Image (cartoon, rainbow, N blue to C red; front, side, top):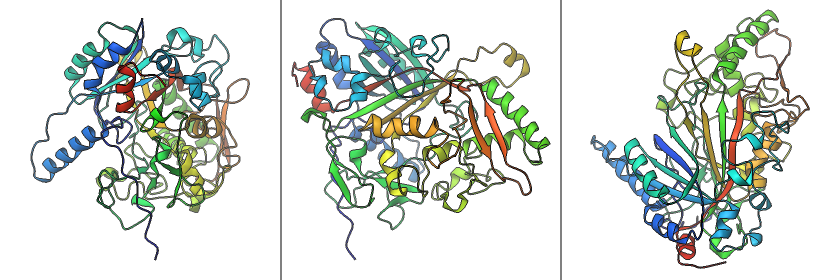
Length: 493
């Protein structure tokens, strides 16, 4: 048997830490800064704070060892990462026109191909965004400050913002149970990134718990690092084990850097709950006698609130689905081709068809669209009492962040081609009713519920109400530490 190809050694001291492996802290603040004058001095002052893959991974190892020995984990450090919009890179002396990714150069706004509202009166129109959408509201730099220590985050934010124009500042906080505001466990499923942290053949970034050349653990496919960081082999669409060509962005200094897509998404929890309450009643009247609001919400997501996938248990959450990480993602959709267990329009199926062939090709091709998600909720949880709900202002949502080396072929495929289209990725699957945007003139989102109960006729689910509305965003580039040093010292390129 031919041994699997040796995975590349990652430049762990040069790659920013939120790209690989991700901060995953309880508190994060996003800080959007504009450059007034020469930004090099500011960058030089921030550089000592910027955290690397080596920093984050080293802390994780120490924390893991403490747990194994029954000891209290070390206090969480304060992590900092920085990324730049095209205008910010240009201000630092970068030749932005040579960056190959047109979407990055163009930016996220009215001309973006994301399905955002075109009606200027709509709260999701880019001209009304809180951050980004227009040149005047697009930060030159987006700084991420993260820690499990909220006070430490605020202190570091004050240091980073000193002397700069702040156009955006938002605190994000993890919710109890690691849920998002609709009440579902978030961040459960992520690919494993191939690559080693040293010369030893077994020093993998992604831990291997099973004997497989395709998976780190059951349900966690391994993806070559060039999908997320420049300068490494990309994923092949015909063979997931063999490395593809090395990803390049147009400049040598882009090596070990990554594109960051940011979306500030506002969640209307009250509207979502009203919909599942009313629609589940309508579906019961139509013959789906077991349809409850909780079941309909799970069908929209593809998982039950605690994290159990419908494909693992169609009847409800397992007692503790996160207790066994080896099985929580160990499922596929090939045995449910017509979406009778997990609907084809369910969010987790729309963005990750797993073992299905799609409009883009076979299952191996799906891995080429993967991104590394790094989101965190913002705003207070939806009130649990009627009195609190009556006074609720509804200002809450998700700070969605993801890293990739192609905005068009990764982030936009998942959003534009799959979530927002009835016909993607499985033919007439229906819209992603949870977070997709309607592609018609009235922005209606619709899908067909097929046979989830024996004897029940297919039922159409449709809504004009948007439970998730984009209220900000932008495209940024997170350079390597060496590139940051180069520009801080007055270098160009």
